[in-house]
Length: 398
Image 1 (cartoon, rainbow, N blue to C red):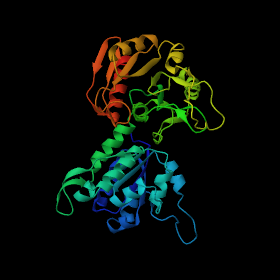
Image 2: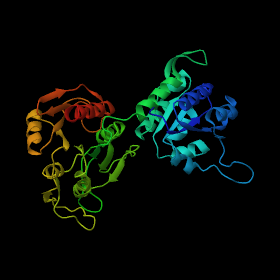
Image 3: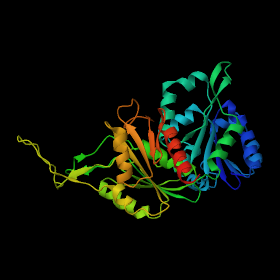
Image 4: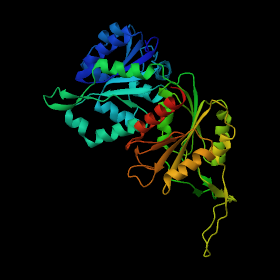
């Protein structure tokens, strides 16, 4: 059983759907998980701590302190203890606080301290779910790496019919099963590069590009979900570290090369998803360059070609995957890169495709292997990452 021995921290918020948390605990315990429960104060109005304590076989926590002696419930230890934090039901109020870093309860303090994957199953009325504020909060939480368990459509406590019902306990259990089951890449090590590189001109200015890093981060997360041990070398981004992934933050192409080289020899799979600057200033000024009346001429020199350099070090059995973002002669250029950089696969993006490339939450790719091209439709970057990892598994390990 995938959940046998797993430590699940269940957060229960104030919602009529709180009664389902009792059923969820029962299912998790039957599947071998160890459960601890944190309730918000308002959750007590819907279900008693005694019920959840009896089912989980552990005390239910709500306050920071246990009693009048001052002994406290250590939110940091709780966050480190858990293999997963599951908020079910997650109310609109708690989701808003999570999205904005508000820390006024034991549950929220534990959320901010947790290093484990976080799942949340919203429960609220139709119009609350649709409200722009709620949708904005959901996007923040997802962007920060939290995993949404979608609410279902049906009759709500208000009598309205629509989306907002908390997912059934069986669905939440299946989500956790899928997450924890051994993946097809168990025992494999993967290296991913992501994001842009910044090549300093002076202490203030740099040469860079518009890469957000979203594609590389999504690939790293998918590799982890498939069981791989993942190292992600990322240029400057605003993205949160994916749960379970070892992240190394760098700025320049040289820093990315040095970090990648340290891990490449031990990696079974390497995916070069970073948009590495091709050139850097020949000289970095020690002080801010002042604006003058004469035109400025900047001498540029080539940066490290990380994929090409590491491709020369490639050993039998290693799989390397490159990206090609093109604006013209896309397929010809991709075929050339596949050969010149010793790649097994090339992921081709064209900036001529709407919704693809930098700055989008979607992407449209073609995968080039020695057998030819395979085209995919426009999808979310999370779905594209799943397609890429599935293609790698089929190519190398089927």
